[in-house]
Structure formats: C-alpha cells, structure tokens
Amino acid sequence: MRACFVAVIWTAAVVTSAAASATEVGAPPEIRAVIEAPRYDGATWGIRAEGLEDGTPVIATGPDALFFTGSVRKLFSVGLALDALGSDHRFRTPVYRTGPVDAEGVLKGDLVLVANGDLTLGGRDRADGTIAFTNFDHTESNSLGSSILTDTDPLTGIRTLAHDVAAAGITAVEGDVIIDDRLFESFRVPNGNVLITPVVVNDNLVDVSIVPTEVGQAADVDWRPRSAAFTVAADVMTVPADQPAAVTLEVSPDDPSIGIVTGTIPVGYAPPLPGVPSLVQTFAIPDPSSYARTVFIEALVEAGVAVAAPARAANPVAKLPDIGSYRPDDRVAELVSLPYAQYARLILKVSHNLGANLSLMLFGLTEGARTRDTALAAERTALVERFGLPSGGFDFPTNGSGSPDSRASPATVTGLLKAMSRTDVAEPYFDALPILGVDGSLATIGRDPPNPLIEPAIGKVYAKTGTTVEPGVLKAQVFAGYLDARSGDRLAYVVYVNNVAPIESIADVIGVFSDEGVISALLQGRY
Image 1: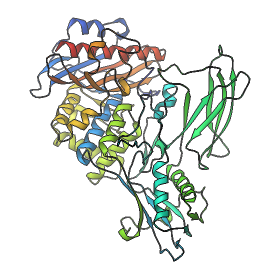
Image 2: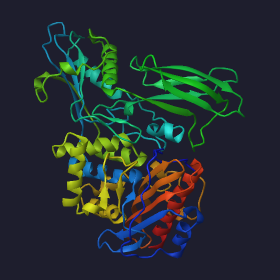
Image 3: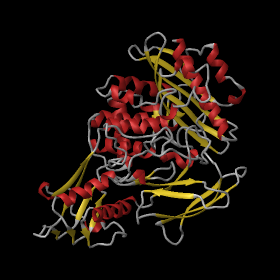
Image 4: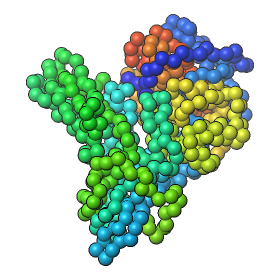
C-alpha cells in the first residue's frame, strides 16, 4: 500500500476538540465497528453523506463542528478558482522588449518575461493535451520518501519562449533579462514554509535521483533541471544490501546555488512505495524569480540569442517598467497553457500544495485581491454569499492548501460539494478528484494490498484526501468527495477523523488511511 498520500506535516500545534453534535443519523454497525476500534480511543469522527438534490443525509454521525481538513481544504480553493476562471481558462505568459531592435537583430533594451501564475509553464504538457502527473508526485518526494518523475521536460515552456524570441528576429540582448513577478504579492505558507510566487519552474524544485551501483562504488546521482542556477555536488556510496539507506540533502552554506548530497544507499535499493523504482529527493529553489531568469537566459543562448547580462544574478526588478505599461506591439513571444481544468486535475489528484495556493490567488485576482489576506477574505465572502455555506462552518486562516490550520465542518464540506455539482464546471471538478483504486492519492487503496471490503467500490468513489501528522498524533485524516452509491444516486460525503494517538510510525498513518477507504466503500455499497 502507498505509504502516504499527501504531504505529511510535522508541527507542534495542539488539536482542539470538536464541539457538540448536530442532528445525528447513526452509523450502521459495520461502520461503527471501524470507528470504535481501540486505536481510535480519544479520537473524534465526523461522517456525513447526503444526496446532491434533496440534501437529506443518509448518515450524519459525530459532531458537526470544525474539524481539521488537511488537504481537503483544496476542494474549496480549486473549486472557486475553477468556477471563477472557467474550465477552459488558459494562462498566457508573454515576453516583451523594452527597446528597439536594430537591423542586426540587436535589442537595445531589456527582455521581460511576465509571470502570470502558470503552475507548470509547459513543463508537464503532453502531446495529447493533458498535464502529466504520477501517483507519487515529485512535490512529495521528501515527505513520502521518494516519487516517480514524469517523462516530460520541465524546461519545455522556457525553451519554447526562447525559441520564439529568436524567431521574432532578436539575435542579441544588450540590456538585461528580467522576470516580472508582480502579479500578486508573494507569501509563505506554514506547510513547509513554501514560497508562493507567480513564477514557477518545475514546481520550484530541483529533482535529485540517486541510484546504487556496485558495493564500494559511488552511486549514480543525477538531477533536473540542469542549470547554472542550481547545481548538485554528490558523495553517495553504494553499500551492501543489508544496510539501510542514509542520504542527506543540504544547501551549501557557502553558496546557495549548490546542493550537497551525501550518504549511503544499499545495492539494489528500491523505495518502499509501489512501482517507485529509485530514490528521488528534492531541493527547494530559494529564489524562484532569479532561478527562472537564469534558465531563461540559458535557453536564449541555446536558441542563438546572445545576452550581455550575466546569467547568474539576482532578478533586477528595479528595472521593470510600470505595471500595465507593456504595449502589444512590443510582445515578442507568448506561451499559452493548457486549460485550467487540467491544472485542477493535477492539483486535486496528487494534492499539489503550491498549485492550491496559486489557485487561491488566481481566484483572488478575479475579485481584485493581490495579497493572501485579501484573497482569503474574498474567498470567504464568495463561499458564504454565492455558495451558501455557513460563515461559522469553516476557518481558513493562512493558506489555500490546508495544513496545518484549516478547519471545516462536515456539513460545510458536503455543502460545497453539492454547490459545485450545480455549477457550470461540475464535470471538470468531479473529473479532477482521485478515484478509489485507480489514480492519484487513492491509486493503491484496495489494491495494494488487496482488500475485499474495498474492492467492490473500486472506481465508484471519487475523493480528495487530507493528512496532517504531528509528533505522536494524526491531527487529521480525511476523505471527501462523491460516491456513486449502490442505489444509483450520487452522494456528497466526507469522512473525518481528528486526533488519533499514539502515532509511532508511517504504518500507523497507513492503517487509518485504509480504514477511511473501508468506510468509503461501505458507504458506497450500503446506500
């Protein structure tokens, strides 16, 4: 079974207890047998399922109070962005010149790439018009223990823009190359202290693959993207198969553009994740705008455009023209993305934290909000006034991805799911959810290992998962989405458990995750 399915966050916060219950529609005996198991002594469950039309709950057990959501929070941020932008919204990333181009093709000015919040920048695009992802996404490499990299080139969009600049007749840039990252104010989220910024290259990560060779020999260490913006120095030795893997990644204290990988890896090593062939870890890019600038300059040079400015330097934002002053006639290239529906699918299938926070800001921009706090306020207003959710039914104080502090009641979650089912984007929203036993964060549930209680519901449960772990405590484990019930009805549902303790290993988390898969399958088969 997959070891964990969303980011596992180790923090030191305290889980608050749930409040008094609302009207109860009791759980059947087979579900009670799961939630009353000894491992859940002291934990709080909240389970709700109801029809999309009449809203009558078929089950509503536990308190209808605020539960910690984990990544189920993404149902809100992505849902609102999808509704506001539309499923066919496409990101446009233009490149402008700020001066004239002479007869020799020399730009007497700067070249500016304007970041417009494109999460993938062409780096996951497939020829069939879909965005590539794997069931173990590289954004979770460090928390899961490894990942499976896509077979796409993370610099495809950057190279396309550079090629188009050359095709526009520019042979050299006398000025500078600049990334305009002023779409919204960048901010950090508590989940991993990740910087949320309008410019994203390879999810602002450098992937490092570590493969053992022969005992006593250096392991093969490779990384992508390859760039002078961030390089890797490795000293990893291959050891006998009976020794553990012990690999450490750290940024050089002398040069933040160098990542240092050291340690040992046993011969024949494969991570304990189904279908994951090798060890993959990641470095976070500390300054995404400066990184994007460097890889863009490198791509320009590859395309035959000489650049006078040094490739490795801080992004010179002071040279940017006034916001909104770019002229259409000065645009020399533009990258057009795949539809936002594909982005929603990526974010919800693999629980993409950066993508969910970008979605919060993209929704905020449709309401004139350029900061995290104003975007959160605009989101709250929309959820209450347009989606009809109770103002006291949710609390999203810091981010659009969930952990560690987002909370919502069971009725609020099913209320959102019902409201989304009545929008023009109901179909792409539904299609973006992980499918039990098929893909995304639910790919292996019921299949690896096989579970006869879950097997009948494979392909009939569509749910976002959420997991937040603190030292010794599973703060939140959640499934929320839709069930194609035995009756033929489609139900909106949520299964919460908060405050499971003690949690001593990842195996304990897996057990709770599996139990929620069982509960989901029992709901699907009973109603």
